[in-house]
Length: 223
Image (cartoon, rainbow, N blue to C red; front, side, top):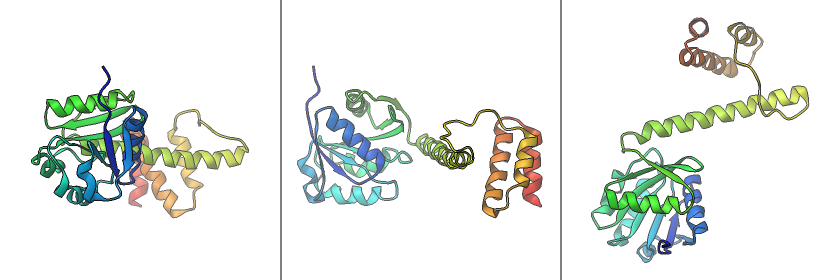
């Protein structure tokens, strides 16, 4: 049996919030922007799709009109469900749903009812959810942002290679060699890139137990 269709208010402009709003709309729910927070109580469910820093303000804005049985979802990966406690005590079913990959989302709830509803919301959109505690979410968020930053830096470096070879570059084959890294460093003149290059080298050495590379980078950093 299909889950009941809901009227959903969407507040905020984060990518995660927009993704959840689109997923719920695609599953047949009536999703609309929440233009007036004074009317937040009119909806069956609310998506608080803001950044972590803006989330307390969004919660405070809707708290006066939140009602018993209403579903309240926030999508900030670095925050857990406890930040929604002021809404839960009013009888709302609260949850934190946040993407790690496009089809793998973190679920954090207070109870089995919230977990069941969260699973239904994600499942009908073809998303796989997995549970995490409030304490686990911040480091997960840090790892996700780290991956995004490294991907952005890779894309920039690959674009530089593409300009050299005059064609698109989708992958740069091979693994970094200590000798190659050292010689590459000597060719870099931009101070900011030199600092970042050493940080990359030290981290690669640390993660992959390349002690020669790690020690070289540490020595260069202290000079």
